[in-house]
Length: 361
Image (cartoon, rainbow, N blue to C red; front, side, top):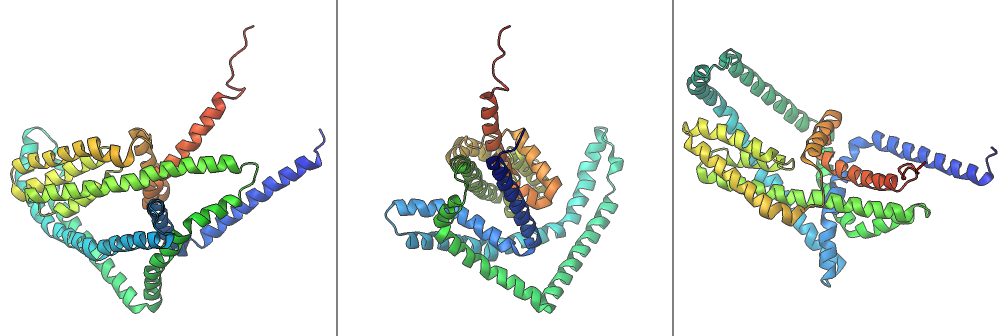
């Protein structure tokens, strides 16, 4: 069958689009080392734009709305950098100093109890564990010292670090100010034949991503505060560190509860040598779980994500396997977008002739 000139032109345009997409992807791969500040700034602008739009809806000018949101984001970033990070670093250092004492407590109390119930205690070699921790802490200190020496001796590394530190706030401001205009210009470049469908899909993906990123971040933040306050009330020395860890991993359903109770329960037993604080830890996390289920998740996230817990766990594990820590961060947002695309593919299939009812013979 002869190919018409119109069909040839369409195929040529498709090939050009594929080649252009691959070329842009390869270009992004080549310049990936310098993209991190742009990625962080784009993420912050994406998170802040809906707030700016809501302020504009209240008759506040775009410039003033952007300034308000930008100042809030800047204060949050500075608080994390100069307040929370040093506190967490101090607690990590205290944890490593206390580990030998915790291991001694485990050796004198837990191992005899495990042996009494028939648990194979041969797998626990406390001296080897202590030696491994000492070597690990030494290696970490040496790496940190080498990194600090490199940073102080390399003017290029210092310049790059300072450049990124300055670039992120500057890029965030400009992207936040021009976000709506950037979206409009991007939509203007879409092929007119598919523009409406692409815009519909992008809006639905945006709703899914907004539900996860903005809502889940708020849930994680509030849970971290609840965990930290509750563990501090018990008197746990590592309350801040454990509360932040449990809050961060709570983006996977029930994982924050399991990890939080496990780590905090062990820390409470080793610190107080009593089971009552362990029960109190379970009470703190149980209360936080009730608050999350009844108030936080319905308020900030709702049912818009719709990912089954098994799908969440698979997405996180697959992301970690493929791309490491970055894959863990991107796993659920990517899964949410894929779910939108699969939903539309499913609807198209259900309405296609391929799925259509079988005619009666």
